Length: 178
Image (cartoon, rainbow, N blue to C red; front, side, top):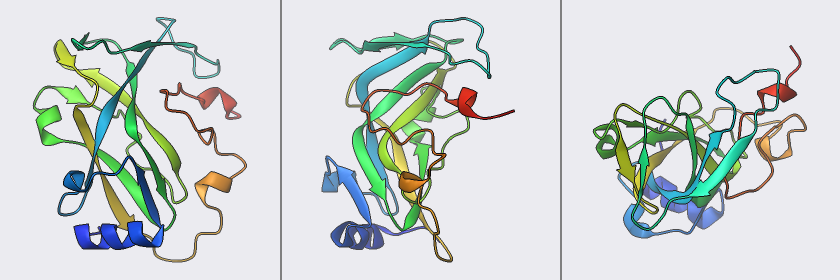
């Protein structure tokens, strides 16, 4: 079941959902809009290796915007820091963003109960498109969980993305054993 705007507000009041900064005008009927931060990153190597720590180079979106190009895997981040303690957050693109040919996540649209961080976006584009810091980039939808959570993400020992950072974070696949 997806939380309604009223249920999201109640969860915020109870401390089950945290959004910083919070702006009531970003609350939709059943989602909350998040915005692109000024921080982007790209991988330094053309060929990525799933067993290797692939390095990224961080840069900032200038005031006049930045043109994203097809064929490049951009990592971005949200302005908003979020915490979800009793629901599963899903990050989806906004239709206006999709209509510009921007995908904001390749596969990782779902967070876990206990996720407490900024969202790293896996951005790709169909054609060149100029983006700006602060533009609406996605929306978080909250799903109820049935049953007790034994290990929230923010205390899970094997969680690879618990370090709080406003910067986009590269893949940590290399930390898996395979």
